[in-house]
Image (cartoon, rainbow, N blue to C red):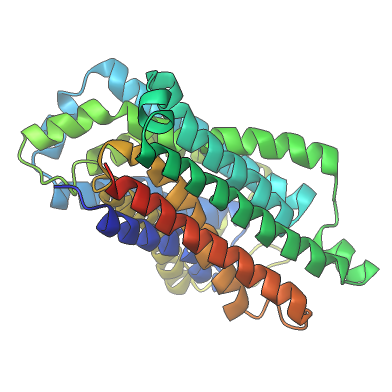
Amino acid sequence: MPNPLIGVFYHWLGGLSSASFYVPYRGVRGWNWEVLWLTGGLFSWLVAPWLFAAVMTRDLTGVLAHTPAPVAGLCILFGALWGFGGLTYGLTMRYLGLSLGMAVVLGLCTVFGTLIPPIVAGDLATKLLDTTSGRIILLGLAVTLAGIIVVAVAGARKNAALGEAEKAAAVAEFNFRKGIGVAIFSGIMSSCFAFGLAAGEPVRALSAAAGTGPLWTGLPVLCLVMFGGLVTNALWCAVLILRNRSGAQWLGRAAATAERPALARNYLLAGLGGTLWYFQFFFYTMGESQMGRLGFSSWTLHMASIIIFGTLWGFAFREWKGTRAGVRATVWGGIMLLVGATVIIGYGNSLV
């Protein structure tokens, strides 16, 4: 029996995992970005999905072997498209800065990932417009977007208070036109993860028929979708590794301008960060299993919780040190809106 309140809790755990994955990466030394990203990604997109699916589900290989080829292909395709979203997310930060870039990408990702699946399925009116629960979820979506905008405004005010040299250091290549174009692409591509999960519903059914409990039936789907993400990211990282000749760093050899990496520490931190990245979707599928027929609203909860915990990590690392009290109050106001949005969406699902 679905329990939306437990579902919201699982989504918060997923958001915490997503917001925390880069914390271990901060401790990695002597590795180029592409070496770190691919090492952590192997845990995120390959090791963790298969390990946890094998442990927590029944007959994983049998379920995937009986998955129709078109279904598996769609899951992998949407995962590959999601991979493009992740890669261009960093480019968005380069052109727009962290606060504005995050707001635009996650705002678009929230809207597309929440609304497009029911639109494609042809039941938008049935799920959202024609029911009290659906209209409440739409209100929660609106509050989510408001919270994202408020957090972005706070970031813009903080940036405006910086000196010219600090601004150049913060967003050296600021370009609004390029940034918005890349952000739109990234937001649309990133939302493809939600489409991949929707395409994997037949896999869930096969896993349930094999005897897997309802909390874990989404894990075999993650094996397929995240494999698609691995393909995209691995290809791009391979290009950068060949271009920068950075592959030797895996063996402990330092680049000319980098310190010699401490291999055991780097592998441990990269593995921890990559596993945390996977856990966001591990808990996401658990939360979605508890949301009932309006499970598509899970994407909104996921995006909101990432921003909530990501902003809290920013305070923990003193990124807002020295900002005016009014700016900090604006940030907390945005967080409160996002918390309220998760409550509203959870309540809307409870009415089903």
